[in-house]
Structure formats: structure tokens, C-alpha cells
Amino acid sequence: METSATPSWFIDEVAHAGSEHLDAQYVPTYDRKAGTDPHEDLVLLQQLGLSGSQTLVDLGAGTGTFALAAAPVCRRVVAVDVSREMLAVLGEKLARSGITNVEIVRGGFLSYAHRGEPADFVYSRHALHHVPDFWKALALARIATILKPGGVLYLRDLVYSFDPDDAERVIDGWLAGASTDPGSGWTRPELETHLRDEYSTFSWLLEPMIERAGLKIHDVQHTASIFSAYTCIMSE
Image 1: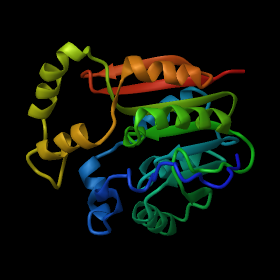
Image 2: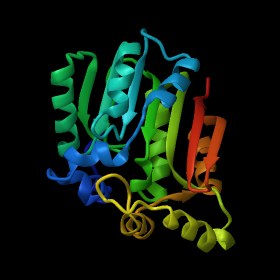
Image 3: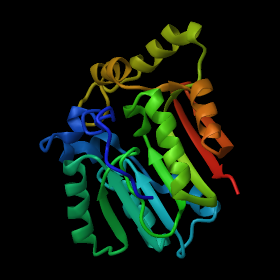
């Protein structure tokens, strides 16, 4: 999918990426802090048909934890992120691993221009919350143009599946479980920063956006009223 010149009113995706994700000192410590295990997600995508003949686009790939895990079972993986610093770490990992079927692209949900055949899978984990809802809707519509008919979007993010009246109770419970060690997990001040400055969406707002984009929600899993995982199928 090609894009025309960016209009003057367009969002600055880099400015919305979170300053820590652009910090060359912070980024090398990100994997230890995030503690992401890609195995469960990879198994799920394989159960949904991910195979060695297919293309997967990882939007918000970060340092490439999932892209690297998926590479052995895909024909082509496109790892997309707005952060040069994150992609530099991914490039170093690729050089050490010898993996040759991962393409690194600097871009975001709203600026990535897909090239080649439509993707069989689009994967995104904990990245869409960096843009406000207006831009989420546009991002989901763009994802729909990337996917082939019947293709799969697997979207994981911080999505609020509680009623507004329950916000204080749920948020207080989430903050109470924050890490006390900033080197090994997200601390309370970091989670509070997410709440104030980033753009997690209520599930009952996000789901109509997904469906309006032409994606059918095949399955959704809500965890602790804070995290959600959506398996979505592109309309035929």
C-alpha cells in the first residue's frame, strides 16, 4: 500500500511513541524489563494457519522479540517500528542470528507503506495505545488494506474492559501490582504515566472501530479488565 504526501495536520507518530522508546540508553534494557515471551502468541498464530509460505507484518515490532520468533515459521516477516533506537537493537539481533527473512521498516500504523503481496497476518502487541482514538480508527482501516481477504489481525494491547463507574477500583488494583524494581518491570509511576499520557481505549469503543474497518472479531480475551487480545479476520 503506497501513501501520498503527508498532510500538515497528520499526527507525528514519533512524538507519540513514548520518550523512553527513543532513548538510546533505555532501549537496550527494554527486553529484560518487558519480559515478553512470544511462544504463546506464535503457537496461536500457527493454529490459525501461519506457515512457511506466508507473510507476517509486525506493527510496533520494537526490538523484534516476536518478529525473530516468527521468522523460522514464515516466508517473510516485516518488522515495523517508528523508533530508530528499537530497530537498531533488532538489526543487531538479526546480524547475530543469521536470520535473513526479516525486513526492518521504520514506520508506524499510519505511515507504514506495505509493499508486495498482501499480508496473511498482521501482529501488534502493546503499541496501538500510543495513538488517540481518531487515529486508531484510521490505523485499523489501514491494517485492513494490508491484509489479504481472510487474513488475520492479532492485536494485543492495554484495553479497558470495565465500566467507567468501576475505573477507580480497577485502576487502583492494577497499580497495586506494579513492580518495585524499575529494571525488571513497570513501576507504579510508569503505569501512572501510561494512564495520564497514553491512549488506552475502552473495549466497547475499540471493538466497533475494528468491525468498521472490515475486520470480524473472531475471538477476544480480556485479562484483569486491563489487557485484551483480539483475533480478527479480514472480510472476504
